[in-house]
Image (cartoon, rainbow, N blue to C red; front, side):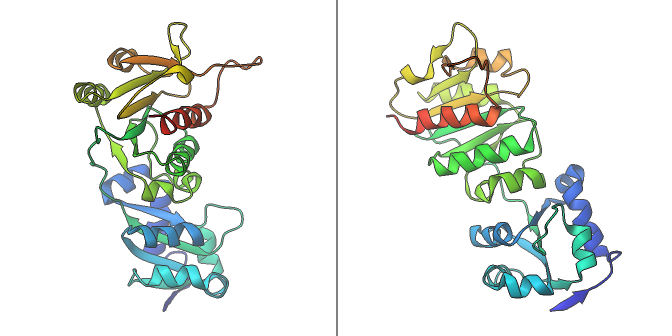
Amino acid sequence: MAEINSRANEKIKYAARLSESASLRKESGEFFLEGARLCSDAALSGAGITRAFFTAEAQKKYASYIEKITAVCGECYTVSDEVAAKLSLTDSSQGVFCVCRKPGLNAQVKEEGRYIALENVQDPANFGSVCRTAEALGLSGVIVSGGCDIFNPKALRAAMGSSLRINIIETGNLVELIEKANAKGMLTLASTPRDDAENINGIEYDGGVICCVGNEGSGLTDEVLCACKKRVTIPMRGRAESLNASAAAAVLMWEISGKG
């Protein structure tokens, strides 16, 4: 395995920039991963790993994970601790890093599926947490309209590999997607604290469902609220007035995954 000992190496500079720049990720069609388990998950999930970097210590400590990465990546390097420090985004780096190709995100909504839709969710940690919960609860996928870069390193870490495995559907027009789902007979739900919303616990359905969650501060847009067949809310007890976006999404996903 070739060695890289200079922080000024072009491959290292590119990987570091990729971790920081959403515009470069968009332009290049690649993204950056850090961590033995996460990079191994990427290898096992079929993500196209184009380049990998490991410290000498990591190759001993995480040998089983690295074996899975090297099996699918032909361009692997041993890097010095100084180089690893340039690449790392965490306080306690494991010394395992990968550059991957972005997967296709143009899958179609299946009319019998159950989906959570996120409109303009800005916090990468919220997005990652939703993906992780969606996979755990067996949802058909996560629909994304606007908001944070889903390949932001914080989003990828929060998802713990789920965003590389679960079906993610990106749309530039959530209203149009909802209208098409309505035409197919799917139940479309808009999550809102408004007084005219129905208790999510009382919703009955048989078939496909899309439940929409909005921006952390302003919620769903009026256009999406109007496009959905029903408005739903989570009953609140105690003095709390609202839930974090990912916590609210988790409750909603539990409801739509456990019925029908």
